[in-house]
Length: 158
Image (cartoon, rainbow, N blue to C red; front, side):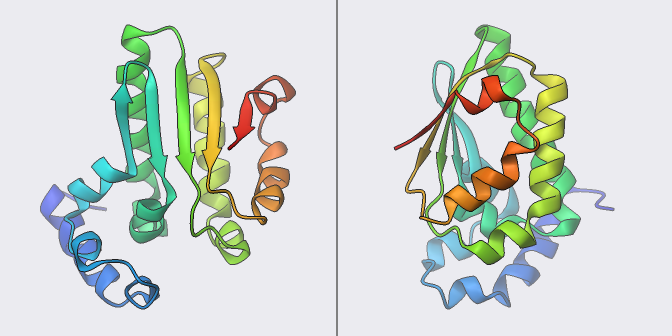
């Protein structure tokens, strides 16, 4: 697959320059971020056991070829958080989510849900979802088949 961060960055730069996101109003500062910087903006620990996931950045760097890298990065951030805390709180910015995105990223959603369920059972304290468009209910219905009832109750729409 990719042998170094430079390979990933090169692939990402070529992929992003041709995507419709440029037309959708992403600023040049966002479009021109390196892949490692994009990952940092996608998912990071903001304070104590609070982790941010920003869909805007996911949408720019999520391609079938990068799914494994994205999952590993998110898992590593959560692992580093639960090393110091028994649970973590997830804050997800869902601005710009569309129905076509749900279909487009279905395999990613399924993979990360299964991976998190296996690696972090009972570690999620709360999941706050911000800027969720109306279509989020469709996404939530899709995710429900991968998320147990107890976890579903931890999800709060803001």
